[in-house]
Structure formats: structure tokens, C-alpha cells
Image 1: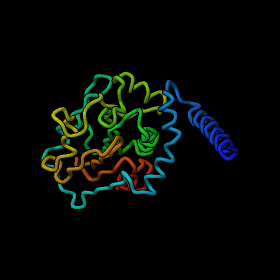
Image 2: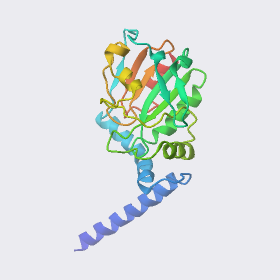
Image 3: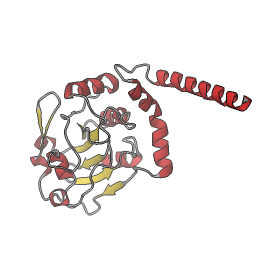
Length: 227
């Protein structure tokens, strides 16, 4: 009986400590649900586990730099503010395309993506594609998503309208191109979860794929951008 009481006391202390930690981590967060706050606080542990287990850490590279069959620059993206981004305006820059979500364990990667964008703004464009495809972790409207990203992560890179990124009849045309080798020249890799990343070079060639467990702060991503 005494052991049980000690266990309960220790558990309560740990829960209280974690609750305090969650509030400290989220002291600048705005309009976040408690789930979102917990996920943000747990992000370092999630990334550590990914590294330890190798989960969601796939990396793929177009080593032969095969040119695309269909031009990347023929594509367009509808942005959350209703405007349209023509990819023909992105010539001469690398482009990192990421499917995102607001209620995911990887959502804190918005922070890393913004930092990556800031550090390479002269030669890199980051485009986020919110999607509700994985465990319905992006249920908000385009306005909700944009407000969440701006208030909590200061996002200044393009944010597309919510769409479907997995294989289906409704799949976003951009992700049809990214995941079909008959269009991009080599890659058939679909997003494995929220925050899968695709890197296109200055000539419109898809050069890399990175799984969600590979942080935007990862050396390999930064090296690929510097090439």
C-alpha cells in the first residue's frame, strides 16, 4: 500500500512538473489548444526518438540529377490569402515544399522552417501545403491556419490553401508532380506523414526528399540548399 502511495505521489509530481514545463515552453503561444501546447513541448523528445529508432527518417537524393519530364515551372499554387503563386516566378531559386498540419507532433518544425527561410532568403523559397490527410490533424479553415502560423511561428513564407497531398483523385497537382516519376523524372515517394519535405533546385529539378523526422535544421538539408 505504501509503495502504491509513493508511486501516485511521484506520478503527480511528474505530471505537475510537466504541466509547468508545457506552460514555460508556450509562454509566447497564442490561441493554442492544450493539445497543441503539449505537442510543442514534446517536440524535442519526438525528434530524439526518431533519431534513436530511425523512424520517419528516410532521405532520398536524385544522384543522377535527372531532368523532369513535366516542367516544375508549369505548376501553380493557390495561397491561403486567395492569391496565386506561379512557379515560373521561382526560377533561379531553390524551393522547399512541405505538407504541414497544426495539430501534429512535428508542428514545431514551422519554427525551423522559418529560420531556414530567413537564413537563406536570397536563394530559397519555402512553401507550406496544409493538409488534413494524416489523422485529421489540420481541421481548421485557411484563415484559421494562417492566423495560427502567423501568431505562433511568425511565418512569412508562402502558405498554400489546405488541400490533399496523398494519392487520390483530389490530390494537389503540385504533389502529383512531386510524387510521380513520370512527371518529376525519378521520385515516387508520397508524404509519409505531416512535414515531409521535397527540395527542388534552381533549374526546376527535384533533388531531394526528406521524411518528417528529418528536421529543417538538419545539416543534410542545409547542405543540399547550399549546393
